[in-house]
Length: 239
Image 1 (cartoon, rainbow, N blue to C red):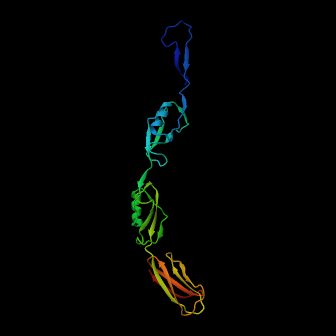
Image 2 (spheres, one colour):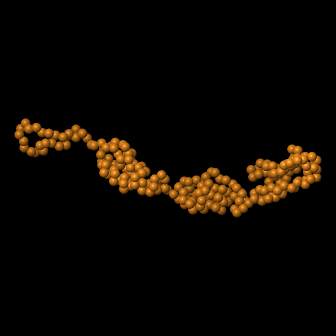
Image 3 (cartoon, one colour):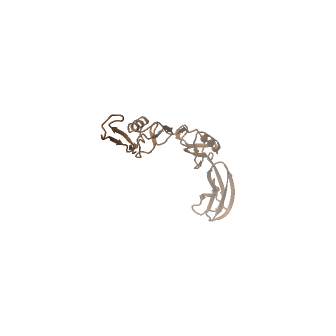
């Protein structure tokens, strides 16, 4: 800026003394606005920037989950920035999602699942559910989301459902001890809480035999029996 960039007459020409010499003084490099090319495909973005007077000699390729393969997902300087003509604009072009194949975890233990998921670049969700299953032994995975062999983004969390084992039905037999009482039989659940399995709809007579069918996953569970709220019996049932 401020320097003479051309003159008239040209240098080294012979003129009369006192002749006027015209000059053109530089106002500095031309400032232009960077074209916004995010979302453009690579060739289109390079063409647009080059025609606008920019240097597009550096392009970087990275995985990106928001833009398809070959699309520009970032640029530096950003579109709309005012810079000197000829400035280098760096483009970041998407290689597409960084995806992986979800391994088959069915029939595996949680420990085995962690190893397989880590190798695939996936994470184990902390939201593990435990449910009965007649097909898988206790402690084995029998459901997973996303499903096995599907494609998922790296670092996706995989949710598991783990078997508590198959459901087994047993009976509890009880003989009423007193007359005109309401009988309640309660059995532990898997968390150790007592759940009512039987409650008299009306009063029972002494000597009446009550049989209650109860269903649980494998294990031993305690039960208690009350008559009018007073415990009269207790025991355990193995499933």
